[in-house]
Length: 230
Ligand code: APR
Image (cartoon, rainbow, N blue to C red):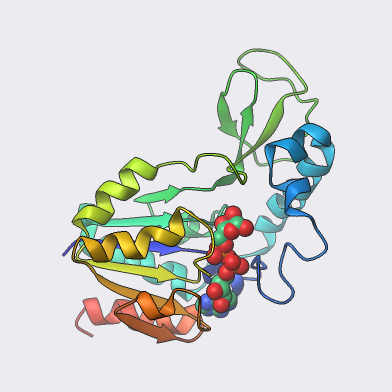
């Protein structure tokens, strides 16, 4: 059985990381253009780095929840026939044991030099004045986050997996941001059984074969238990 899972901010909500579009969401009081676009970074790199530094520091205060661990268990069961594609930039999937994982919107724990494009680990506060270890230049260091208008990471590998998927699940995502919001329709065209696991109705709920309603920490372990015949 080939399984592809897409996760969004909702899977990390019960770990204490705010989502983007729920009532007390991350974007509240912030302009996406200021902190999640290349032009915003060009205009005020320190504001953007401060925004991501704050989110990176928060990682030390949160832990994976039962939903993250359940997906790591699913990967154990299906091995190379499993792929987890996440829109999240936190490291909770890794910390729960997931390895077959693509961060299509980048990772808080990485930084990238805008001069030479070198990506390196980053677990401390970032400043645009940081020098690049590879090209030595400064005033170009940015978080390795995919901003609006930029090309997400790992799309080719994601699409290949969607073409072969027999089951596709979208977990904790509002289904509003492309291209991830089209994954369910793509998987369905290729014959996959599609499942939406979310605390509430989304704009895409109607298009799924199956919908599991409830908090991810309860619904995801229950869904994974089905595969284990439990
Ligand atoms: N359990 C399950 N689902 C939940 C929970 C929970 N405990 N809490 C919230 N949700 C659901 C919400 O109902 C919503 O559908 O998670 C979803 C979160 O949606 P968004 O905040 O829009 O997050 P996401 O879909 O990941 O956003 C996609 O948009 O801003 C960009 O790059 C950013 O990766 C992000 C992308």
